[in-house]
Length: 253
Ligand SMILES: Nc1ncnc2c1ncn2[C@@H]1O[C@H](COP(=O)(O)OP(=O)(O)OP(=O)(O)O)[C@@H](O)[C@H]1O
Ligand SMILES: [Mg+2]
Image (cartoon, rainbow, N blue to C red; front, side, top):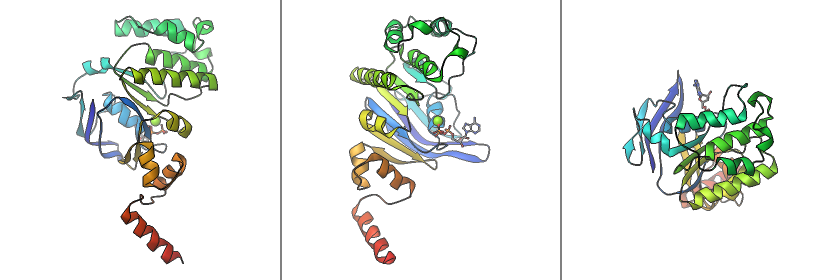
């Protein structure tokens, strides 16, 4: 569905992506993980054509996205920070998106109900709480039935009830055979929702695979601890890793 080959992106002199090669071939929920500033949003924006890579190639359904825009109609997107004019009312924003897409949204009413947004439809965006704004953003991200959904920090600011609703929604979309990419720093969310994780660090993909294989590789039972091992630069759990570990312990003694 999406193939990324040797992607490089720098901002000025700062390299952010330094040869990212990655593919999402099967439907399911993929968590894109990595510390703050590791390039998750930059990677997402590159897929959407909002950041132009310095080098490398991105294929969407087998076609190079360079100079293309039509493919984006097949992607629903929740930005990490959605900046809409504060004086717009919620209903006006949703109508504006409908206007831009020139397409009737399939699920808007249901989503408004799901996130309890009826009382806020006439309120201005600037007067909403952070979590309520995020719910509005989620409605606009899910109201079309696109085969690919990209969510940059979807859990941001949500209360527990909204979080449960979001998880239900993600399950439903996955069951429809969609590809879902989501960044998050909430490890519980990843454990519960993700089929696979991608770990981005220092411009490279340090791991891609299932949660179980990540834990096995780092010989940890918790995701948080396995990730801490990646961040500490510890080797994975392999025959070679075993030997290195033994040598390290011997040296320490
Ligand atoms: N438009 C830009 N101009 C200059 N630097 C940028 C720009 N966008 C991102 N960066 C820099 O690129 C690096 C990666 O940023 P990015 O937003 O992709 O990180 P992230 O992994 O999404 O982080 P977070 O977990 O905080 O959301 C950061 O150092 C950031 O300051
Ligand atoms: Mg980000």
